[in-house]
Each structure stands twice: as C-alpha cells, then as structure tokens.
Image (cartoon, rainbow, N blue to C red):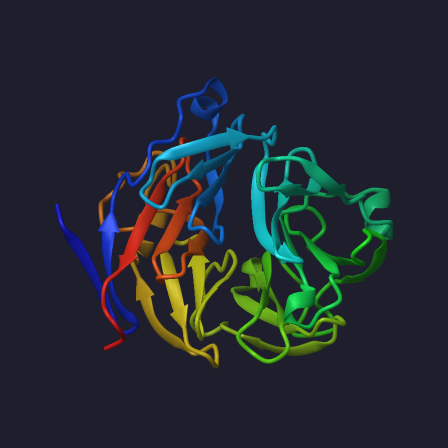
Length: 312
C-alpha cells in the first residue's frame, strides 16, 4: 500500500515496518522505542527499552550493529566535538546520563545533581542536550528530570553541576519537562524545553535566562524537537508530528491520529494503522529531510516518512 501524506510543509511517503526490531526477551517484555537520531553518514540510531538498547541501521534499513545495557532507554542526543560524533544516552530506570562513542564506549557519566529536591524526591532523568561549541556554546550539558521533580539541570563540559531551572524563571513551574534540545536555526543556539504537562515549550538562552514561551494554543503533548533547515519538528505523544516554521509558528500536522489516544488500552492495545501515528515519543531527520519516528508502546514501532516534494 502506497501512502503519501500531504502537508503544507511538503509531501511524505509512509514506510510501515521500515525496519525489523530484533527479537529479545527484554524486547518482548517491554521494547518501547523512545528515541532516534541520524548520524552524519546516514546511519539511524534507535534507542529502545531492551538489551541491547542501541540499534544501528543503514539508510536502507538493514541492522548493522547493536549494543548497550540501558533497560530504561529514554533520551538520546547526537553531538559533535572536533569532528567526532558522540551520543548522550539517558536511562530513566537506572537514572543514568552517559556520553558514549557511536560504538558504545562510555566516555563520561554525570552524577545526580546536588539539589535539595533530591533529599526526599526521586531523580528520573529523561533527556540531555549540549550547548555545542561548534554552534557558539561552551559545551555545557543540560539534563531534564522530566519524570522525577520536573527540573532542568545545568552542568559544565567537565560534568560539574552548576545550576537548576524549575520554570518559575519563565512562564511558570515545569510539569514534566520531557525533552530538551538546543535549537540551532538562529545565530546563537537556544535551549528548548518541552514542558509537556503544560502543553507548551519554554525557551532559554545558553546561560539559562528565560526568553519566551510558545505553543500553548496549538500543542497538546510535546515530547522533544528535531531541526531540519529552518523548520522544527515536534513529536507529540498524542499521536502526531507538529511542523513549525522559523518563527515557531505551526505550519501543519503530520500523520495525526489524536482520536486513538482516547481508546481503551492506548497505546499498547490500540490498532496500528498505516499512515497514522499511535504514540510518537521521538523523531530524527536525515540530510534529505526524511523523518524517522519512534513510538511509546510495547514492542516499539519505527516508521520512516520519506520526504517527496518541495514545500507547496
């Protein structure tokens, strides 16, 4: 079945079952696909709640390698330092935030932040972002505690804890700051925080100063962000991708299926429909603008949305 999704941002061909996820005992028990990114050579990295957790696919969808003991695989961010690519991996179950090489060698681990919230409260990190030197930053690392105390922490490049944001510096207290990323579309990158429980995005500069908020009038459940040219792609857990322009204004929704979220048993027991998303938790994009989505459901789901046409 050839399914083409037409949007104001261009047309996309839906590739159902683009890859095969390896059968493992932990994958059968959980296997939720939580993050995806694309390396410079076009390889697609999928982070899922199974062992091994990191799955590496060729641009054509062939499994190349797998590695990593991250049973609570959640956030994954690709960064580049001096021409070399690294991954920042976040495990929500083990409360681990680690930097690795693309083949799985651990090169840095961040300690739990020394913050009063953790004297009694639980630390459950969900995502990491880096203010990369190549984009004008100082290499600071930011970590979202989306499932614990709803805080965002700042570390320097050496891993020393520096400061914490709680949202009151800006539009209001965070409620599940789920995914974070540095938006590189402008001359100076800005920190975007998916304030999912508040159905909005809060934006800060690289020093943690509040800049603005947006999305409360058109976002329902922002999970994170991926940039392609001057566009921003926002996967929303409530079954759609939201496409934004250079000024963060909505252009269109892609593969929307919001009605499925109110069905009994969502997301695990609801029917998967080709051409419609179920529970997108992360997205990645390659140099050609093809979008890869991963979904929050038992066993996982990875879909390729092939970019076909220029903007209408």
